[in-house]
Length: 156
Image 1: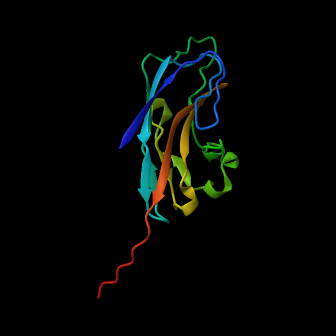
Image 2: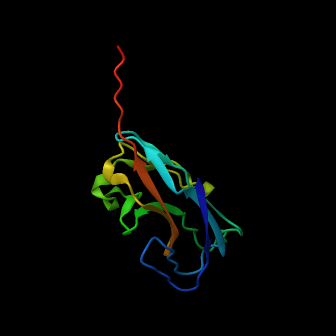
Image 3: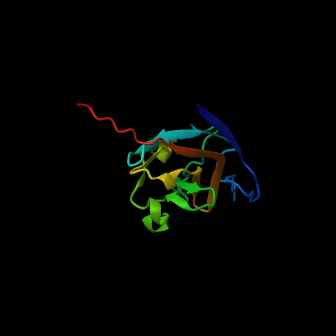
């Protein structure tokens, strides 16, 4: 099951206790949509891929040539705001370092994440965050990871 949420532009910084939206400035469009599964199931030690995409109803700002347009950066965080995926590995939680990678291309509105060697503590919830310069957007939809138990079969 895939759940979608809508992100609307706010003129002022906005925060709430859970995984919600943070805004500063006015760089992005007024209406974004975001999609990822509500939950993923995996096996301990395996990898999981969390499909994720976003779209905006109107266009993003274009480079006018006056100053370079900062590239969109995709981040994955916990409910507490700790990094599960960040381009700077030193920012990532120790128990996720070297085990997460962004498979999607943010320039193509793809924020798909891979978690390798899944562990019981990797259950989430996780949240996607987009940044461009000083603008920070945290989507109000979270994803949890459920682990199945291994089943050992012996064939004689």
